[in-house]
Image (cartoon, rainbow over all chains, first blue to last red; front, side, top):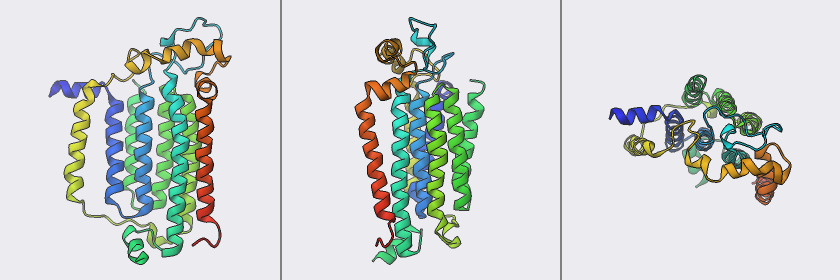
Length: 125
Length: 174
């Protein structure tokens, strides 16, 4: 048991990821307000991106911009650039999908005058 | 590790604030500050490009989207009631958390330079990108040279999202 706790303390990024991921999921499941659900979705998405980027950090490494005076390059000196390139794309797509879902909520509100999931379903029948 | 831990605590605290606050508009503003703390954490672990994008698109644009949606609503819709917790969530989510934390030992340690993610492919990009692409910033080299086609299709995704928003929000839409 003590070993397990020690292993968690070595990985604070993973503890934060689990907390944010499950809390966001919980908000999406429990709340009936549609905008609140999207806040939960946003926290869930950013937690996954945070998890990926945290893998790229190296002890004592700097940003992945190559200094001109340091050829040939030693890869240990720079942070891992691959997760960065992946997540830059993912963040933009995340906000684009968030915009579409907020537009859907806005359209539903204009028609049914409510942000509550149950009221919208009731009036849609 | 000295600066990271307080920032991680601050990250969880701002997320908790965005979730627990009773009013939706204040929740959205706290969510913006959460995005900004996230950008700070990423700048600290060396992911400056991701931090820029998160500060501009996450903290800026997403907050504006939320506020635009909320600006048309009435006050009674943005107040939240405390809801009963369903039994499935009460049992299922802690079980899921235990399962995820049980597997934590197999993941590489935070800040480990010899983790599998940093040893196989990524040194090749770091060592060869200046020679092959003449771009000192390796993230830019990957996005715009090695993976340029993927970035092109990503702009297609954003274009589609923009069209969907315009169709949903146009005047006279049902």
